[in-house]
Amino acid sequence: MELSFVVIGYNEEKNILRTLKSIYNLNLKKESYEVIYIDSNSKDNTIELVKQFPSVSIHLISSNKYSAALSRNIGSKIANGKVIFFLDGDMEIDMHSDIDFCLNELKDKKIGVISGCLPEIWYKENKKYKEIKDRYNVKSIKENLNSPGGFFLITKELLEKVGNFNVALKCNEEIELFSRVMKEKVGIYRSNKLTCIHHYHLDSSSKSFNNRLKAGFYTDYWVSLNTTIRKKSFKYYINFPGKKKNLTVLFINLLLYLIAIISIFSNISLFLIPTAYYLLILVKKKFDYKSFIFTQKYNLYLILGLFDFLFWNRDNEVVYKSRKIN
Image 1: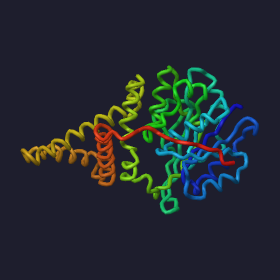
Image 2: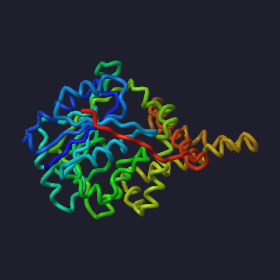
Image 3: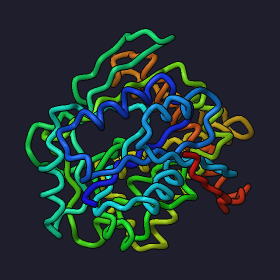
Image 4: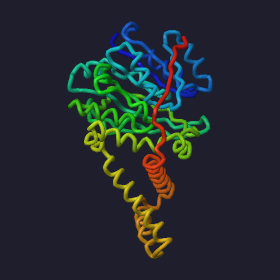
């Protein structure tokens, strides 16, 4: 079999029919591909909706730590195709996407990963309120992939060679995997020949800062860094655009927090240093308060994740079972 679509999801009753229909609407021979759906123990009607497609192989996971990495790892082991197309359950493949082009590209041993354009439609309270033409602004047939995006194609052979997804990660799992792929001296690309539309529901409570912190999302940011160091792929990880800057900003913020704490107990004038820094950032953002607050809150939670990683040392062992239900 040439191709396996591995769709992952949790509580995707708003999206899953659209996702699966988009696969079956592609111009592909039925015998050339299979569709696998991996569900992270959904509490809504997702499974019943997927059952409307008898040819979809449905697998239900039970685990102490659900994640995209775990679902993709399980799905890839079930897959029979030479190439795996990973796809989130809130995405829709554009019917004009050239899947044959992607498959032919992956026959080149110097190419490891192919992804594509990612238009986004945002919803709030089930109403469309924002559209993004293409988050990654892909303009050419093949250009460097600079950021993950929830969908990509990779050969099963290469995925197994680099050790598959790290199931311990709820965050940065794609970049951590891609760093190991690049260590094999192969390229990772985006192409305007492939397009997936992301249907993003903003009202999902699972994406709140507090819930992500409790789930270990921000802790796993540091776990992924530590993993790349141990697997000797850190130099590839850190060279993803924005990663060096992101780490630098985090450590600057950590230093400023420490200065603010010290100023309370010793010299209150030291508090002027973080105050001046954040005022400069606010000016640079042209007093865009919402963006400023969001960014600083994100940095704060990542730093809380660092303390969790360093001192609380939560158990990262993942226990799981999966079973086919159709």
